[in-house]
Length: 101
Image (cartoon, one colour):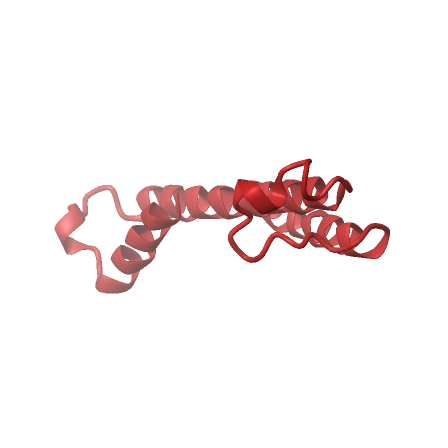
């Protein structure tokens, strides 16, 4: 269920990002979205707000997906198995999920 919610947060995020470019002038903040360029004084249209909201939605989606992978790896292993007996691929996915959080 969490992975499904994580997946279905991505289309509204993309739609919000496209909405910020279609109806208003595009957010001219660069790829860093630093405050001097994204402040209300320099860019008064709501396109920056839509872009930041889209960034937050995709970030929440990424965090939920990584939590789902971590819980799946921890719960789907055999309970008689120690953590040092897990193969390398689940460990690499687990560490990548930790880095995403």
